[in-house]
Length: 81
Image (cartoon, rainbow, N blue to C red; front, side, top):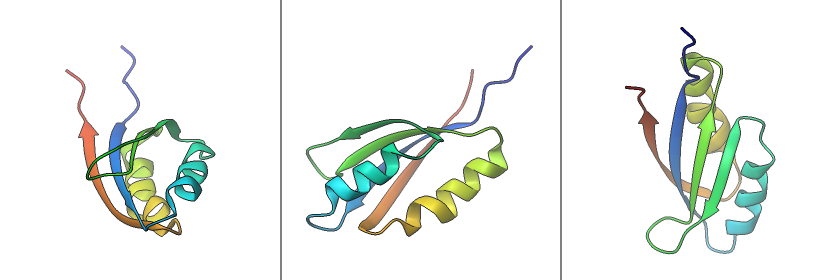
């Protein structure tokens, strides 16, 4: 049986006027599967997938938080049934 790749949904709050810059940076990332602009408390919703849980953690802890213009993130880890 094939195991699904680890997946997460990340909500992003950006610094004012940085929404587009952050959107384009995320959209160009290999592990990002979807990026959506939002209206409301958060500015962006991103679905990411990574080959391993460890690589997913590195993306969440290091890569995405270092993007210029990212103010805050909230991560939701998807769990397979």
